[in-house]
Amino acid sequence: MQRRDFLKLGLGGLTLPQVLALRAGANEGAHGFGRAKNCIVLFCWGGISHLDTFDLKPNAPSNIRGTFNEIPTTVPGIRVGEHLPGFARTMKHWAVVRSAHHNAPSHRSGAYWNLTGHQPQNLTGNWTATRADWPSIGSMIWDAKGAPANHLPGAVALPYTLYDGGVANGQDAGFLGMAKDPAVFRPPSEGLKFYEGKSPTSGRINLDLPEGVNRQRMNGRRGLINGFSQTKRTALAQETAPMSRTHEQAMDMLLNPSVHEAFDLEKEPRAVREKYGMHICGQSTLTARRLTEAGVPVATVYCAAGDLNGSKGSHFDTHANNFNRLKNDMLPPFDQAASALVEDLHARGRLDDTLVVMLTDFGRTPKINGAAGRDHFPGAYSVVFAGGGIQGGQVYGASNATGYEPAEQACGPPDLHATIFHAMGIDPSTTMIHDRDNRPLPICDGKPLPLF
Image 1 (cartoon, one colour):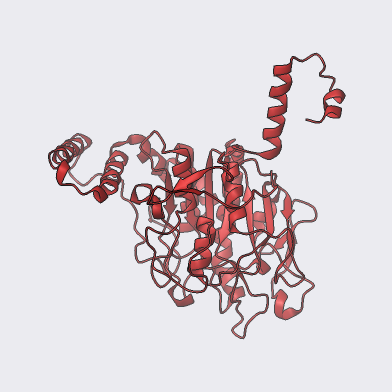
Image 2 (image 1 turned 180 degrees about the horizontal axis):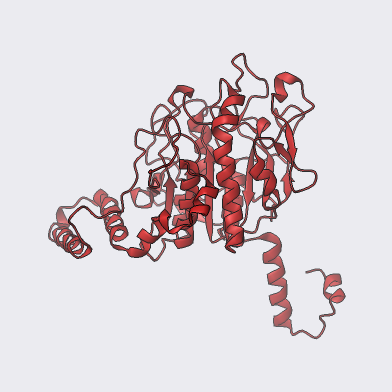
């Protein structure tokens, strides 16, 4: 608090501790550090086109601006693409970043950079996902803040594992080990519209007890397993410990009624489910809201088919037929789910302590190709934030007149992650994470964006 503000408010009668407390509260409100207790990441797998969503260029030549029009939002001066009516309606909650960029043009390298906040070892191609990789954002927050106390995992992902010529890097806990891998769930599928094309391992962790097995019998099985583990302790290799913890966690989840409650979408009014959308994107996003409400710190929703399938299927890798694919398949469910999420969180009084962020691999080329598509383009892309202390109704940064590169306030994946950490009460400049050799490494080398 500035001295002039102190005098203007006439607070001269306060004690020194009261003044210091007031100042601390003002600083926290101004900077948003630690406001978020949970984080929901919406990841647009494939590389969503910034030029057709959050950063249209209506004055650019036709071979750049494309066929979509801008529409006004509820915030004067901020405009988005015509197929984002939900974002337009809820813009007072969103901060749009139009100046993100990096130099990794392949899906797996670009996704890795955005999912982990750290530069990939291979900028232009794929490499095998291993435990030497950096952990995902969910796993790092789990490591920094600890696990929930109610048998829920510290991080979850929905509804698919991402693939592109193999498992995409940066989705698991990397060098933190299997024990901190996000649990991958898929909401119940009855009556849902699915993406075309999906991950080879698009499974759902089934929380229903096996037929004929009640909770008492399941507890008995746990006792037998634990007894076996005790008697064979010396024979168990050290590397099996994380798997044992994973099995124990799965058992806890099976036996915990509160966990079942969090996953039971039938507990939601039908109108709420329909507002999110009766498709896999909407119901995964609703499940993420329920899980974070139950105590899971971080939930990541992959808003696209799990496997890119050579650019075929429902994802944002629109090398061909970009405008029809976005208009008909990809933007409607994403826009519906994201806007329903922030409205729902706001109505429930949870938006202040839940950070929502949309990330992606990269943007798309300004120039439209001969197949009416846009190709990979890491030179500029857009991301959006809401909640968790973020000041909505603002735009940070800008790309140039053709969306080719940042023109103002350039930022990159490390800065996006630093912003997430900052909102979650994790100091990105001092927090350390330990690799497989127990060497301390800075959790992030970016700086939080001034969105708070």
